[in-house]
Image (cartoon, rainbow, N blue to C red; front, top):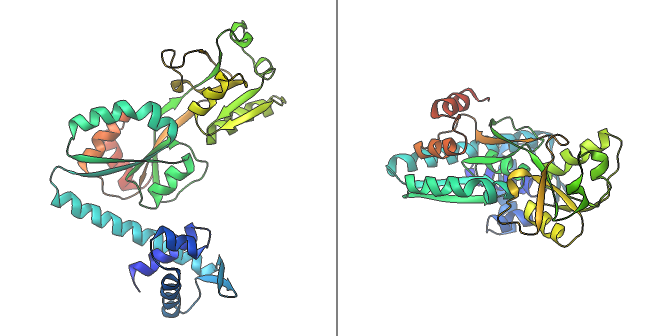
Amino acid sequence: MKIRQLQYVLETYRNGNRITAAAEMLHTSQPGMSRQIQLLEAELGFEVFNRQRNRIVSVTEPGREVVAIAQRMLADAERLRRLGDAFSQSSGGTLAVATTHTHARYVLPDVITRFSKLHPQVRLELRQESPMGVREMVDAGGADIGIGTDSGKRFSDLVVLPCFNLGRSLVAPTGHPVLRLKKLTLEAVARYPLITHGHSGNGAVLGEFRKAGIEPHVVFGALDADVSKTYVKLGMGIAIVTTLAFSSRDDKGLRARDASHLFPSSTTGLAVRAHSYLRNFTYDFIQLIAPHLTEQVVRDAVAAGTA
């Protein structure tokens, strides 16, 4: 049994059981991957994947256990590599951070600027993903930490610590009637074409309308606030965005109005693998984001495997 074989199994599973796509991700050949997976199955004595006409179609029941074990083993191998890096590089190294567009654009610039001054010898790698992608990347060992809102899925090997809350605001063109209303209500918002944004934000915003029995006219569902604001400027509608994504200085021609009483805030969380080893500079980065997450708080949570 080889680590490489487990990597092939895991990557095939992550790519929807499409071995060709997995081979492209790993920059290797599909026949070679197929052969190695078959050798692993022969050694295990059972099939990891169900096949039809030599094409992988699904994971077998025992194959699911293999995938779970492969995830843990490969994550542990990555931790060993990072541990080796920690002792071979006394002050330098790499910090891989998975995060969403909103956090990369509006939260992290100041954090990264201060961190780079503290640790100029550390190479910072920023990997932008959806909220789900952030958690998946950390869980798979592709990033040291993840910064993002709740993805709606629980990962047994992840520790998620709350950092801060993100409120929501309504954004409209300057002079729009909704900005002049004395009281902002869901009914009032629903009178105008609506642009939502964000993977988790769309659900939270539309969920409040559903609870009230209101059907808003959603004309556009953007993945990030910048795109939402672009189409608000074009006059396509009004938008609900996270409050920190609006700047009266930068967003000329637009105005914002607090909508935190209408829509729930979302919590930004720090995701890190349970029982993992974190370099000292990682704790500095975390505390720049959330001062209450001290090194001891994070160490205790990671060691316990729970927030």
